[in-house]
Image (cartoon, rainbow, N blue to C red; front, side, top):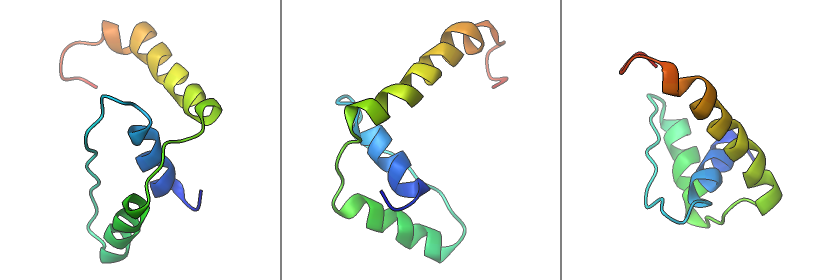
Length: 72
């Protein structure tokens, strides 16, 4: 893995139901980084994928579920 952009793209690609991810930037060099990251995309290793996914589920179960709609 070379950078945060690649990590994020590979994380999203690691979920079979994900069909696309949208990156946004105002800087051309960041857009190039995103397009480079998706050229030879491969999912994260299972152990790397598991930790952020676990934290995301925890956040959703403990915090996000109690928030008023559209406040997060």
